[in-house]
Image 1 (tube, rainbow, N blue to C red):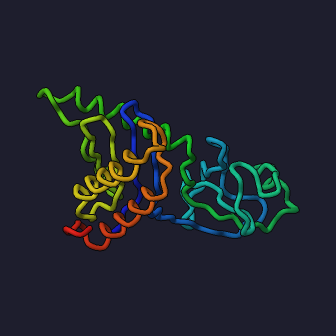
Image 2: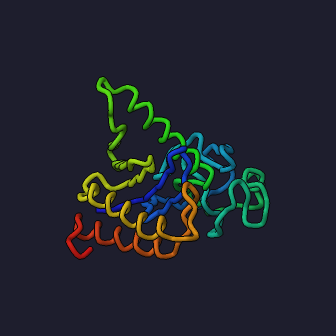
Length: 219
């Protein structure tokens, strides 16, 4: 069981808080000789596999490191373009680690805004007036759970499909938001949440939810 991440989106669709609790990473490292027998391309400032799936390497996987050193987007740690580096026979044999790239801050902002729009569309598509909007989206790998407050703040949790107690967790996060963000005299409504007590209590709530699946009276 696992809770992957938490998002808080304001009523305008802006991401004001995001925390990655657990990010499963499937990574593959392999040593290659020249010439490279998979096809790479640049996409969104990352070098990804476009053709040549094998040995656990999948189309869409990004280059994460070269010879044990993490890359920086489309550049090696030394600032060289990865595609140019891999065209040089003198750099072989070379060890490349592949995996799913982490979402950038800009990508998280964009996804939060997109979900805000989908939530509104879901409300408008309802055959009955007063729909709550999207409360859950399910895939084979995770479930997205959403709780919207009366003031329009959305609390979103991504969790393992088998994880229980998410409804209680969402309301607990709302309670933490009310106690440690809204009551903080230095916090401005609708703005990013930067509060150590909020972080600490959120992490504690996630740990309790993962272990117990629910909240008791003292939680």
